[in-house]
Length: 341
Ligand code: F6P
Image (cartoon, rainbow, N blue to C red; front, side, top):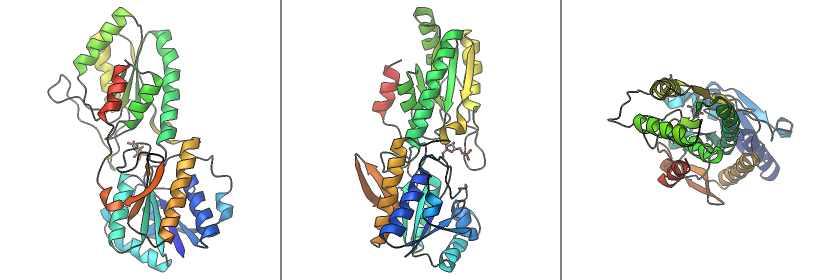
């Protein structure tokens, strides 16, 4: 079998573990030839290919990023993109395709599978918002990085008696903010799932600083928004691909909080640091398990499925049920984050 492989959308730590697993399982156990497409769907549309073998995957487990490269390119949003993809798949005689991506890449995967291409998907995104899987590759590493950052912010916040806003990624789901906020002991977590009331935040900070503390840490998901009808007007600022303009919500909050409380307030935007560097053991293991499961699934002749972590098990679920949905942070976790203020 000639097995195609691509990584699309924003990179995450743990992608190289997937590539390694697909090559080892595909070539070693199933006797497949593994063809990598560079830079996500764009490479597939443009015919940018590389045959992957053992030499390409040596020592890649601890490396962040993706050795195949990636891009924010969706064939169905570009004129003739789907036809270009189908042409390359035919020219390269690809019998099956493994696609690793987040919501955008997976929606494209569903469209390509509908064209009759044998395809299996693997979820990755530090946002952890892919529906149907308990975890997506990259999330665990991002939470670890954000938690360490909050720990470091703690000491400087306390020394200077400041309010510190720590902005993390998470456009429509506040998974990183909630989990890192709990792990790092933040006083307030602002997640898109629970729009905030700025007056309540100001009241809380004034009371806390008057009664027992001289500093506070607020973890802000980049997609956090004020609740309708409350005392703050804010429209989320986005770029070309729907990515949120880093720091915009936090900077607005900084000005409002400083003015209303008189407390010195600072912003730290973690940005792409959350997506860079060495993957945790968890993400290496998850990437390896997903890679093996996807390779076995496509080798059995299956198609239109996505690997998912459900509890401790890896399951194959229909891709059609995943595309277009968002997995939000459940209220229980949001409650824990606010209960520990
Ligand atoms: O989709 C993952 C994500 O990390 C989002 O949380 C973030 O808004 C976006 O990617 C940033 O995209 P880019 O790398 O294109 O700036």
